[in-house]
Amino acid sequence: MKQLVLALRAEIKVGFAKTVRYPVQTLTSVLVLYLLFVGVFYGSRSIAGVVNTPSADFARSATEAIAGYLLWFFALIAIDSMSQNISEEAQTGTLEQFYLAGWSFPLMLFLRFLSSILTSLVMLIPLLLLLSLSTGVALELRFVDTLPVVGLTILGLCGFGYLLGAVTLLFKRIGNAMTLVQFGLLFLCLPPVEQFSGPLKLIALTLPLTQGVKLLRRVLAPGSEIIGAGDFLLLILNSAAYLLVGIAVFRWAERLARDRGLLGQY
Image 1 (cartoon, rainbow, N blue to C red):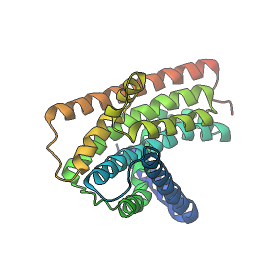
Image 2: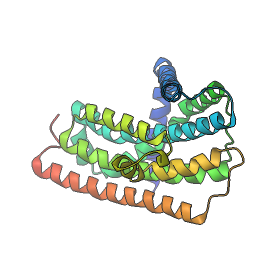
Image 3: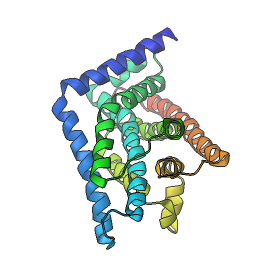
Image 4: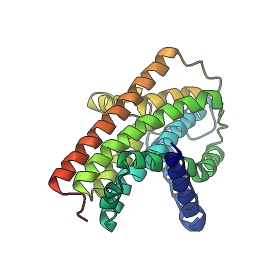
């Protein structure tokens, strides 16, 4: 247990050090994320012919979009801290060293994921402030209601990260595919899932983000209603399923990579 705490502290220290020592990278990341939201949100409303003036409908739409964007931000972290991390380790030739060191590599990825979530607050807080100012929507961040929804959704995203990490472990360089996944998640989680139909709605319902976004929109909406126990149970089951399946698939990919001698290739 002590070793796990020390390893987590080391990962958090490294994460904060990178954020502080490369301020231009951090600031430009916040700016890019902000401009992406503004472009997608206002652009989609303009294409649909919806007036972008302050109103109850605009405030509701902006709140829903920010809720989806917030969880998409955490999905980016899951992909970056697991899938892209494996790709970088493989390219630099250090992936095999993790396995030779005797550490559980899935556990190490989980610690990196947790540290990335914590260090991402440096970017997330100013990003939310910019989104709130640009839309004119005052977000009601009631932590008692918000944290359980975000926390459970993050666990599901961790499992999703393991699934993508398993693919990366076997095929190494899949950067373009990860880009498609990232932007695919963005366009599926910003609009309400009720607006989709057919196969697209089915895909959206199976994502680890869908239930979390649905509940977070309720929590952030002005005068929001109380979330029922059934909705929380569905979120718990969804996140638990993604986490367990993700770990199982990653373990299978590890065994297959060892058998094929893929851990030492870069």
